[in-house]
Length: 525
Image (cartoon, rainbow, N blue to C red; front, top):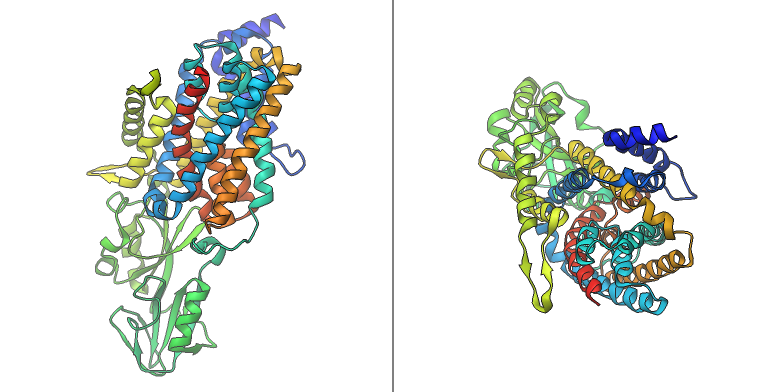
């Protein structure tokens, strides 16, 4: 046994990879309706870390790399929708801040009642919120051992309690008078329509508002590609694409459903999905790309990850998007050349933009700001890359630099970074966890963590309900409030709704900054 321990101590990368593998296995085991996912790396790290205190030493740089990869890639994803959703979500963000403050107050009150140290409370606050704010908590408590004990014990409590609360809310259908309709829930439909009145494409309800698209136009037996300025005559047939309700309204204006499907005739006009890999198109608005001039066609849909979106002018193309293009049959090759359509090119990581963006995030995180009351604030290696990622994700590109990552690449780096970070935290916390996890002190940490999270989470969810936001946006906001990607994954497994990810990004970014400040306040009390 000593030989094995000596080997693992001498070869830290082997230790980390073993923990990652065992953590991934544990993460797939269902515990009732719950699966821990990436959080399995933390639990296995705790187990392995209890075997020898040397296993958790000297992991600071590797842990920092993990948290940088995770936070920067989350920032890139959240930044693309943060500004557009800010008007709708700012009240949810305010409620999140109130909930976090209430959690801090509850943790302090209950913790002092149980006789916990300020280091315990700061650690459990960061832990139950599964937050990289543990770095700020350790700094504020001068590395006190109780900080890691509180973090290590509270972390799994946060995962379990949050999953239970998400399961109670995610599928609800309460009134959402101030929220938008989910594109994923509504879906897209295409209806072949017979025109019964003299009208025009521009006059069709929803067209000028980018709620519908028209592609195929059958006139006197000839299949054409519909143009925005076309007049429509009685007997024409057109294909209307959009959300079901918008399409229904447009069809009612134009005439009635056709018994034939226009897309079955692909002799003169055809359609196909193309992968966006052309670097000249990435980061640009669809409305700024002259698709008709280059291909004599039009884009009707954009598929990003598992979400199919109507192609409106404001969509900014990202690497890995799949665009559905309707073109003359003899121009398919031109469309393929224009969009790139190369799996090999889109799978390549742009190391220049990734490294530069993450480095700028670390520089931002290292800026120290003095606050009233002797507090010091710096974003650190977690929130710095997160905020920089959100900024660059909103910008999309700067000259030749394209900041967006393909969705699959972003997810891989995000999960890998998170698991490395959690594995290192578990290894470093194993001894501290073992010393108190099965004691009355450990039980007290569990109680304070669970009660404070229930209080803070309830404030956020109830506020979202009364503010007229959907249960799905509230669920995403709660997942970001907690800060645990496993909670986001669990919510997405219950319901397919893009509002979940949007709210998650907004609350995660803001919540991380608030948590960093609050753990320092807790440590000083």
